[in-house]
Image (tube, rainbow, N blue to C red; front, side, top):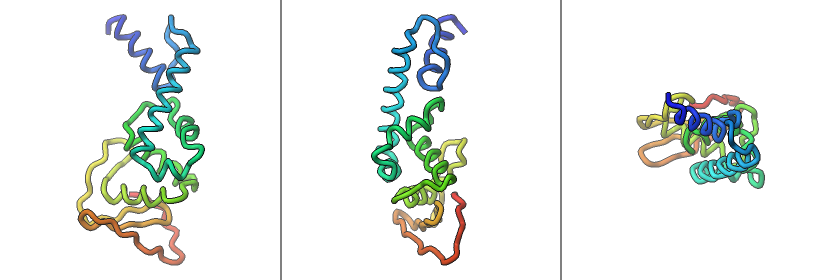
Length: 154
């Protein structure tokens, strides 16, 4: 790897992955650029996951940027999915966000590592207490069974 390529890789790592500031860069300006990139990323995820973002309003940007700091971007679909699953596991996925996650789970298979792949239909998606059935292009919310405590996703 050339010296220029190594310096560019160090700059990218500092900006999006929480790496140390490379030599010759003003740390304050680097922090400002990193914060701006995290806010931009939060906006992209909010556009892809509107119910997730709404469930965390008015603290969406702060909550997302705290979660995303030091994590390399995986794209708005996967970033939102990973955050939603983490919030679900912590018991803090609220509002309509569980239904949004369950709908995504019915459309796509996502293991948290590889890119999402389309599911065949019919398919059921679950997120905490919410389950949805997808038939073709339609999503139907399934009634919750009494006493059901299934929190499995996917």
